[in-house]
Image (cartoon, rainbow, N blue to C red):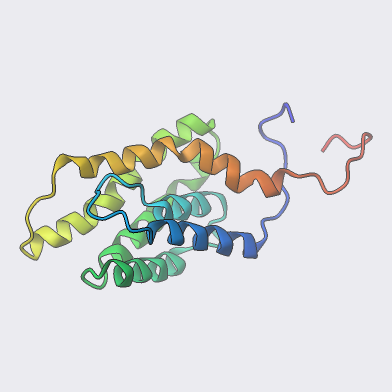
Length: 170
C-alpha cells in the first residue's frame, strides 16, 4: 500500500450505478435557493469519467443531466448540456489527470466544475433571467475540495485485495 500506483481491481458496474443514485438523492434534498450547495452528480460524473471513461461516457452524462433538469423544473437541456460538456472535457484529460496526486487532480478538475456551473447560468441569461449572486462560484470550489474524499470513497472497493498472499508483490 506504500506505492500510489498499485493496480486496482475492476470496478463493479453496480457500484457505479449506486454512486450515481446516492449523488442524485443528495441533489434531490430540499436545500431551497442555496446556490453554494455542491452538485454531487457532477462531481461523481467527473470522477467516473476520469477513472472509467469507457464505462461512463457522454450518454450517461446526458441522461443524468435530463434527470436533473426534470428534478429542478428548469429548461429541459440545461444540465444535460452542462454534464455532457463536463464529461467530454473530463474524458479528454483523463490520462493526464491520473498521473498527478489527488490534490493536484482537484486543481485540474476545478475549471471543469466551473464550466458545469456556468453553462446553466449562461443559458438562463440568454433566456432573460437575471444574473445570480456571487455565491454560485462557491459550489465548484466546494466540489473541488470534496475531490480527495470522493476519490477515497469511490476507489475504496477497488483497493481491497481479493486474496492476501504474502508471496505476490501486487
